[in-house]
Length: 416
Image (tube, rainbow, N blue to C red):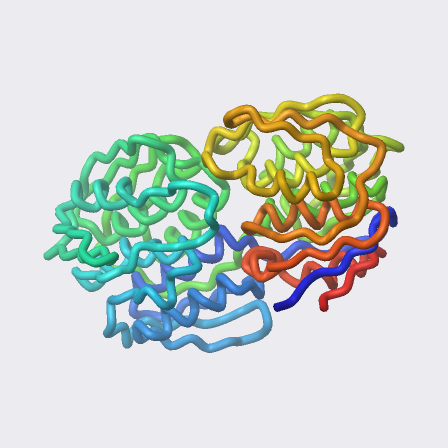
C-alpha cells in the first residue's frame, strides 16, 4: 500500500495549476445520463472517484471516450442497465447522484446505498423523499434503493436539512419532469451552480441556483453540450494552507477566488498577505501564523471540507483556537494523528480546542478519510524530520498528483 514520506521544514515557493473540482465533476458526469446525445467534458480531474464513476456509467451502457488526460466524451444513447451495483459504489458516496437522472430518463433505477469516507451519518432520505414527492415509488431492500416512476411530476420540495447531493439529485431529476419543481432550503455551493450551468447548456430551464430556492421548469428532452468543470476550491484552499504553514510564498493558477471568500478571510486573519488576480491567487505567509477560530456551516460559510487543514495550521500558530464542526459528527478523526506529531488538541463534543506550539515533530501517521489525509500532509510539511502517511488512497480520491504538485513548490515529498 502506497505511503507519502514528507521531510518538513521547507517553505513552499513557486506556482502550480489547480485541477477541476471533484465535487463538481461527479454530478456533472452523471448529468450525461439525461440525454441520448454526446456530452463533452473538459478540465476533468484525474482522480480515483472520477475513474470509479466513469466505470459505473460504462457498465450502465454509457460509452466513455477519453479525449485527453483532462477531457472525455460521454454517449448515453445506449443506456440499458439502470443499476449501480454495490461493488462499484461502496467507496464513493457520490454514486447516489445517478438515482435522479436514471429515474428521469429511464423511469426506473436500482442503486446501492453508497459508501465513502467514514465521517458520520450522511443519510439519503432527503433524496428519496424529494423523488417520492415527484411521483416516484421507492423501496429500500437488501441495501439497494429500488425506484420506479412512469413520468416524474413537478413538485414543491422543502428539504429538512441543507444537502448538496440531495439538491443536485432533485435538480437533475426535475429537468425532465412534467411541470415546475421548486426546491426550498437548497444548497448554495458553487458546485451546485456549476451543475446548474451545465444543465442549462443542455437545454434545461433552471432559475435560482446559488440561492436557497431553485426553480426547475421541466422540458421534454435535453441535448448534448460541451462543458468545462470549475476549478477545485478545496484543492486551492489546501495548497494555500500548505504554503501558509511552511512560511511560504506561492501563486496558484487556474483557480477561482470568488468561491473561496470564507477561506481567504481566515487565512488573512491568520496573518497571510493574499493578492487576487484573474484566475490566480498569490499568498505570502507571515513569520508565524496567528490562531484562527472557525465554525463550519453550509456555503457561503466556512466549508467542512477545509476544517481539518485549518486545524493543522492552528497546531503551529500563535495562540489558542476553537474549531466547531456543525456538519458531520465524526469529523475529528484526524486529531489523534495530529497529536502523534505533537499537536496540543482537546476535543469537547463537536468543538476542538487547539493550542499552538513552536513546532511539530515527524512521525508515522495514518489517514482516516479524504480531508484528514490533507490535514496530515499540511502538518507534515511544517514538522521537523520525516513523516510517513499511510492509507493515502484517500488522497487519491480528491487530490490530483499531490506529491508532484508539492514537489514543484519545493517540498521534500516522495510516494513510496
